[in-house]
Image (cartoon, rainbow, N blue to C red; front, top):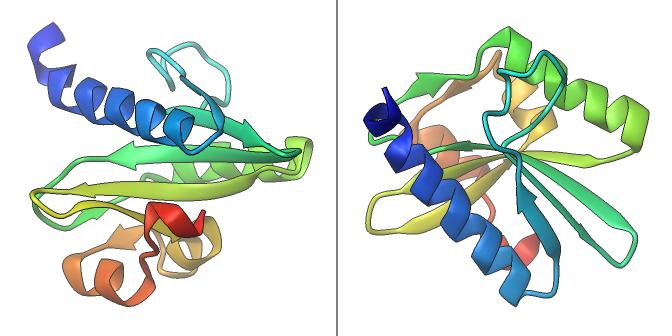
Amino acid sequence: MVHSYSKGYRAERSLVHMLSKMGYMAIRAPRSGRIGLDSPDVIAAKDGRLLVIECKSRMSAFTIPAEQLAELEAWITKAKAVAYVGCKIHRKGWKFLRYEDVFANKGHVGKKFIEEKGIPIEAL
């Protein structure tokens, strides 16, 4: 079971290090979604701005479950966080989708959607 999560763990860990190098205080929320609380994969803060990121490392289209979208919404509402879905694209790096865009698209994320709506890490 541990092996199946290793790709996601490595992606989340690398994102935390990238954000840290950009001046963010960043942590990975281990076993997010499994503790019964609303917890995104990565939480980062800089200059009073709080980011919460649900990370995905996939080579094909996927759908963010409604429960995960609701968890991000809770962070937006309760903590005034800015929420993103971070997509690690093989050999291309990270692209980030605004929560509002993913929600409007009913959680569906595909290559074209990422190309149209995705922003680079520097724009966070």
